Length: 76
Image 1 (cartoon, rainbow, N blue to C red):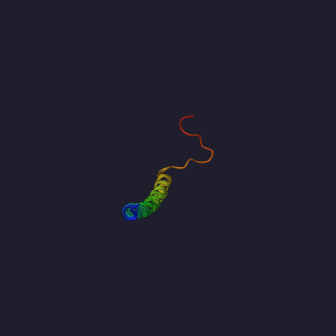
Image 2: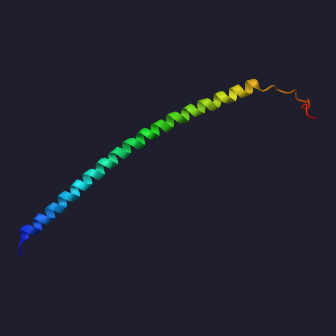
Image 3: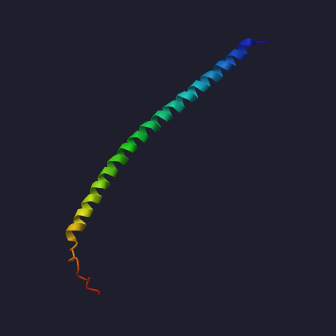
């Protein structure tokens, strides 16, 4: 039996597996970096939206005239 052919085939398969693993590792690293960047962007946007909501509440409170406690609204 020719063991050189078997060893050569095993070596080729191993090289192929290592190459595939390297591509997968690179893709995984890139995906992780993208996920991290997106999570940072989401955190910044949540902070901005929170500030905008607070500002809208302040504006709404400034514009709403308050009715006296015992006065009926005009539509009664």
